[in-house]
Image (cartoon, rainbow, N blue to C red; front, side, top):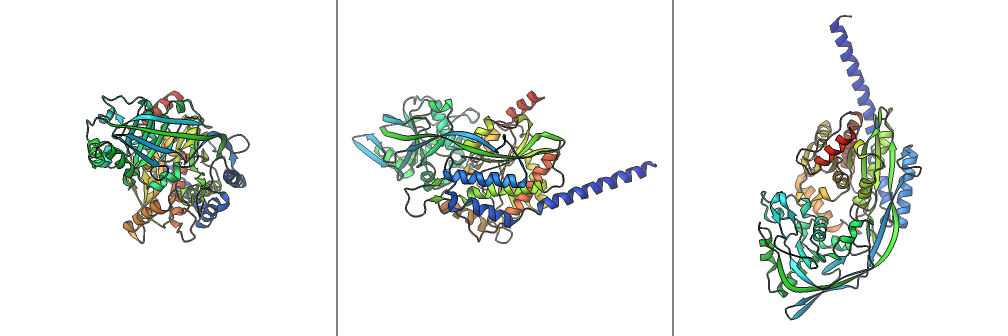
Length: 550
């Protein structure tokens, strides 16, 4: 056979194979519909699910629904026979009658729980307390050698209670030479500040809440922290500060006035390099009394086995839980969590159906992972990250879904943490197929990359993608979309008002899910492993992991 003829035949065969594959992909994409998505959201966000709190009757109903759907699709269990990975939890429910007393300068300021402060403990204990604990203003409560920053330099806060600001100095100043400017780093997250307080030996830590740098209003703090909390029972808990909590900015100003200090001027000084912690000359007292209950919640795992490399996995994940029911509230007591995160969990089911519709499964396996206790501090995904059912070195990537687009079609899609990994180019390519663009987080100051379950997998080295809805609406544009997002954050996020709305336009969510299908399908049919961008905090762990596997 002449060489040119052979080349032509190979080219024709390749073209035919591409057309067949594209037809197969399109068949799967066609199963992703607004009708299926809306149905699953309505079921998961219904009042009958009671807000999907971990270790509740709402959890039992939720996981029964998820397992039933995965079984109906013909997916295999990802953990034994029952699709469940038990996650041991401890519930701590504080007595809300506590008061925070600030004494000194000849007077006592008494703060009201819920109105002025919330306090809790990460220790597994029925009682913890601060008793005449010296108060110290420690700026942002950050030790970051790579940024030449140490708010504790020259200070000893062992046994004392520190008052710290939320976010980091870059946000406060907008100075791009400080941390990442307006983009929040992990140092700005409340989780870091509690962890650093423990490392410094503090007895207590109070974060001053302000809506802009926190990224949410005070009602989110009370809705998320003022009720019962779940914890993983780990050795690290015993070393945490005895009392952790939040105070409002108004309460902070009252405390600083009592200390004859100006809150706003000290806040400005705290954003400057070289700031030194300031003793307030006041003492704090509060007692946290807890009702303890040990229980177990569940991650739900379903698998579509691969063909040629079935021992390698691509993970889609979403958290099924929300905040449950608050029986102390008047009126609506159920935190339905429709957007957060019935939408993402519904998306998980819709994607599972799409992959199952392929005439032939991908070469790699797909793990559909619905995790618990995200709202309690990413506990379900944290547990999976430290107890993976699939070896991490065999885990290709993770794709997270937390709050899908309910506003309609967008010209763009957002990648939270854009620039962190090779996964960005997969999204760019899939977006181009839809004639859409990819943009970084439009609200980087809110630290979303550290606020959802992909972060638990990133911390153990797995490249993790956190896509979010676009903001350039096909019909209404960017300013309209931003207003809708701000309205959701102010009026429905982590509130009973986050309910299913039949007026939602889910066509944009369908676009995003089809895009994420293409990303996962491509990852599942390649032989290479994506990695983190050089210089990111997760790269060394992944490199070490993969070197060990080889």
